[in-house]
Length: 216
Image (cartoon, rainbow, N blue to C red):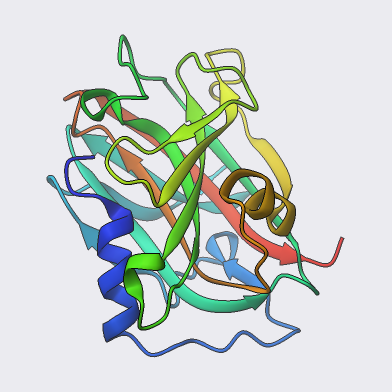
């Protein structure tokens, strides 16, 4: 993305109050219940359209991008010592064609999910780990975001094999932050999601189900 979500998140921490997360309320994306509580739009190049839609037996969040890049951000505070596991499901209907994702001109993905650790008043120390569906990078590969050294991209899905089906993930965020960002942290401070195609000028249609943190 030409306008980096991570950079905007740095400013977000200076303007929004913290949302306390209670131990019994770790469902951050309550899309299946038809709720978008606490999710704030962040606009960049054009506007990805997000809306709650019925997808089979349940509601889901639809993201439709036409050469655009915008995301939804939820600011929060999660104790990842107690709740280290991030769980989510998404569906991509297509992958992008011909882009090199490790350079600025190709930094687009049909779905991505960010976990952000705030630097507090030292906002330049804010870091982000991006779980992405890659065009062709092997699952498990990772690389620096081409726009900022404060973010790492991690491919949790790759290629076309599982398009048009729900794919579910469970990631130990505490371990991932240590492994890929070299950070020993106790809390994360924001989660963001995005469907973006601004750099490639292509289109993407993707869906998200609930996003939760769990003990195991």
